[in-house]
Length: 223
Image 1 (cartoon, rainbow, N blue to C red):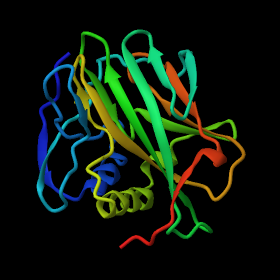
Image 2: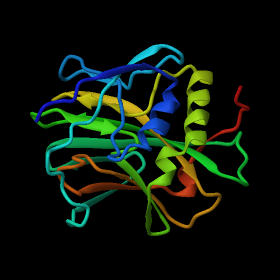
Image 3: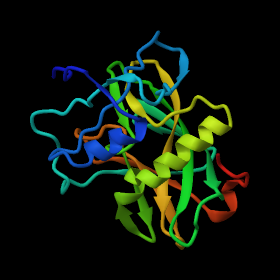
Image 4: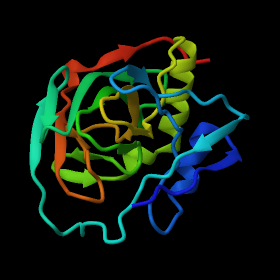
């Protein structure tokens, strides 16, 4: 498999998601976040209105069909799940942003650490590798909600954090901390964040259950 050539274009971070969602094959750009193996790093933050290097996840000639059953591993906030000795993933915390119109949507930010414990590189991208399961139904829309993405950008800027959405290749031995933003409906009974470690190769998932009483709330107004 050959990696697709990185593109470079001028755009704000959230426009990446918007553009990619219109593609016939849902691929999304991500920053080239390569580094020394074994070192913990954070997803790179993209300054708005500057050039960014876009990494496109690698897709095999014959990706696995969505109808092929996969296996599920279940976890909860704060728990580290090992997937087949190849990837370990921790849902560190989930922050709800209170400075939004909750009559329209709720914004959750899922901060995660993903470590590649295999001997091959893996991809991780906010839109392609994550889904939500709301009241038992798998939903794609929350992970590509532009309003939630903009809110996330404001929150991390205001709090002085350099965390960013997952948009990169993760090398063997490398650990990356980033976030997944969710534009959620105003209410739900059950919620899981589904992470697909080897998207396009298997339909296996890691399912993190998110309970209302576990949410951390950010109550300050966003600038």
